[in-house]
Image (cartoon, rainbow, N blue to C red):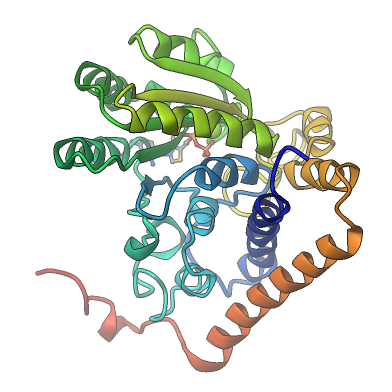
Length: 325
Ligand SMILES: Cc1ncc(C[n+]2csc(CCOP(=O)(O)OP(=O)(O)O)c2C)c(N)n1
Ligand SMILES: [Mg+2]
């Protein structure tokens, strides 16, 4: 086998943990227990997991409005994530941020915000700092195809290229930006081609194949550590759920966007299932996979149960407690 068994099983565990976490939010969103918008990452897990598997703890990542996966993949605490999504005091932003404001400094997850493209320049700053410190650390900016329409992305790519900064721009191209198809927004679907014009390493990959993502990310990390960055990775992927909440945005439903056949064809390329098939073919026993699933299920269940039993969202009188005034 080309990879150590440990490496493969760690990757599998992260994929499953993210999927279980995401799906655990579905019913509480529908019954109103979770308030505020929640953008689920189901179907895109291989991007966050493949990239973060190539990083060290001391490297840093920045996310988006859809960042539960980035948070877990970089080693953030599941309990703090779940608590934050439920807006509880024990969350990573003390329950005042919710699903879209995720941060775990000790894990190197330096932030996520709902502003499309909003963290790209922050990641650039982290890369500039790393370059001035000469500490060989790498910064990653995760963003969606929608951010490719924001000027700040290309300003950052240009600056990073001019200064040879250790930053990896990771575009999660899931073909839609809210409820618009990429073809309605971009003249050229292939975002990595635009990045190429800045004279940097830029590649389009299968974002549902976690080992493809891992291999390309390792290459990009090596380039960055050798002062041959920046790099741009366009990972083609698809959300199994719709833009926000559990709705799948299928044509004919109230959001009426995505052809059902398109969703069905991507379901066949579910990144968790694809990797499971790979592991079984590579000779890893089903028992080992079941054990991991069991553990991940228990971890998510324990996180949800702990907050249900012990805490409530902050009341009106406490909402401004951590706000600088
Ligand atoms: C600057 C800005 N413009 C518009 C919005 C509204 N908005 C929220 S999410 C989103 C779509 C983002 O699409 P993409 O970047 O492809 O990410 P995806 O949701 O597909 O993961 C938009 C337009 C916003 N939050 N910020
Ligand atoms: Mg998108």
